[in-house]
Amino acid sequence: QDYISVKEKYAKYLPHSAGRYAHKRFRKAQCPIVERLTNSLMMHGRNNGKKLMAVRIVKHAFEIIHLLTGENPLQVLVTAIINSGPREDSTRIGRAGTVRRQAVDVSPLRRVNQAIWLLCTGAREAAFRNIKTIAECVADELINAA
Image (cartoon, rainbow, N blue to C red; front, top):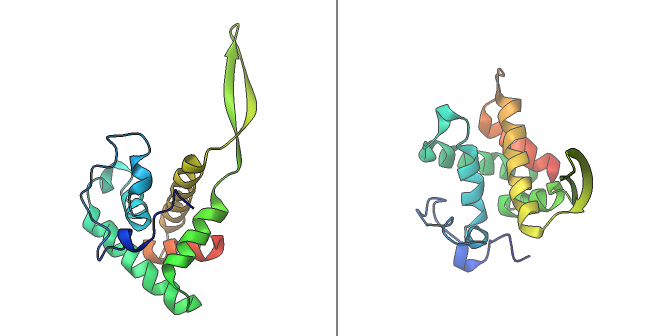
């Protein structure tokens, strides 16, 4: 897949590259997939900008995944993203003041974006008001989705 970047070129020691991925259209497809996951964990105002915390969460989650499944956590992440991206969506077609929803196919990049967002949101909601750490919840989301 062209939109999930995990090859040797994207293999990083830390998912923290300080790259400018939002300047051009489709540039964010070049961002290492682990870093996309890390960045989307930093959501909801109180967590904005705490990238080192997000990096630590992802690291722990990957260790948990490796202990539980014995597989390569990156492979688990990629299959989870492939499985959880929606294939079709509904869009709002508005004409003459009435809005009706129409089914449309989802572009590959949006499937990846949506999948990352859904995985992170699910993990965040699972960890909220819970004794489980967010890393455990991320690991659970990825394992269940893969």
